[in-house]
Image (cartoon, rainbow, N blue to C red; front, top):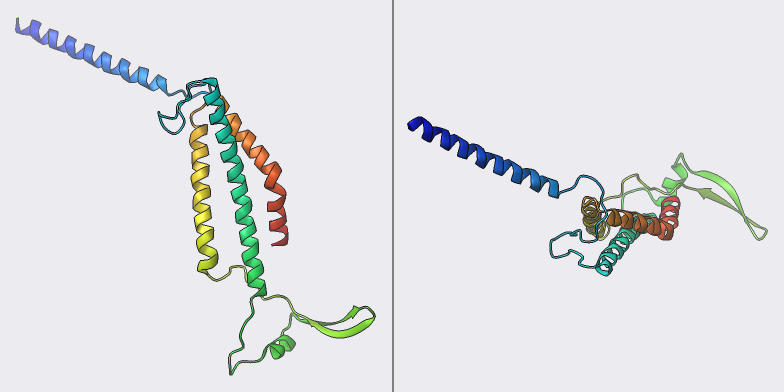
Length: 198
């Protein structure tokens, strides 16, 4: 009789174990690891689940706009970097008492060259000096704080787009690609100009 009770307990435990494993298997099948086409895929939370084809289209349009804004943000960052570099090039320096004047430094600079400048038939002797620009500009709150804030926003938008792709919804994925294409089409040339002339 004791052996019969032990057999019943082990059978019950095995059945419970099978129920738990089948439950965990069915829940793991709920998250697909392959692309699928559905119009009711949640985005970012359960409350943002499109309930109609129109709501799904609106969600896709939101993702397109978000991808365009990400590309525009990178263009803005390149433009701000270019403006900061221009500002550094135009910065005027004060000559401190006891140091050599700028003219003496220019004349003694090995990288400076003399030449003749002709404008409207008038010739002048000039000395050409390379602009004193370093590879790394000094830290400035007015430049580095907005740059860091903008980069943080761009990282947040990029991670939101990544999470949308990770839903494996084909419509969401194609919307992000479409937004990236339109954003590059609209803003790509400005970024290239900022890099070339920066």
